[in-house]
Length: 195
Image 1: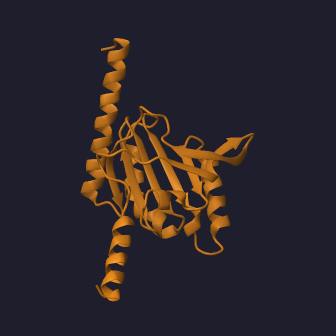
Image 2 (image 1 turned 45 degrees about the vertical axis):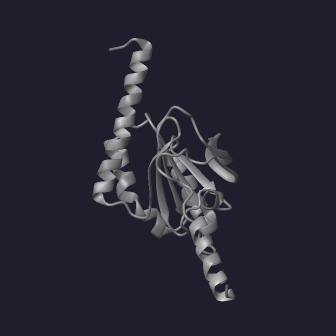
Image 3 (image 1 turned 90 degrees about the vertical axis):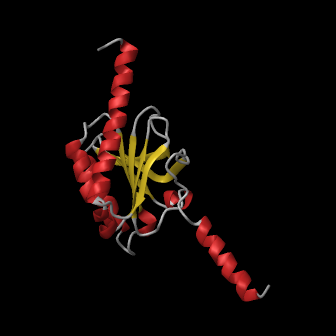
């Protein structure tokens, strides 16, 4: 076998293994972000604590993992805007993770400052700063992009998309989340004996 063929095969295998490690029907791999991490407010000041997935088993979880760039933050804004208006808030977890390792040179400080402002404005929002791009490498996501991941109450991936969602995908994903929220509401009612 010639060296050229070996090199082509090796690069093809690397490309295959670099594909996302997330597939609907499988559990989302655990992730720990220790450098920076989740933004928390203490005595009116924003600090950090390590963040890990899974969070609050038994809840539907919607995560958006994106590069810390203006372009990436706009990719799935139509979906996140509709989530705020079309879904019952507080009944599911919504987490935004920014990969600071992908911030444009010299802008990481500005991104962190904006994140802190957002946390103060929306204290219940789960905002995570991924200093070293742990999520990008652990979940094998595309760089300079935005990914949306929906897991059911058991932590199984039910929706995964990198890049912009179409209008149809937005509507079907919202319907999917509503379905799981309805199931959990019914299960809770059955456990308490409520109608």
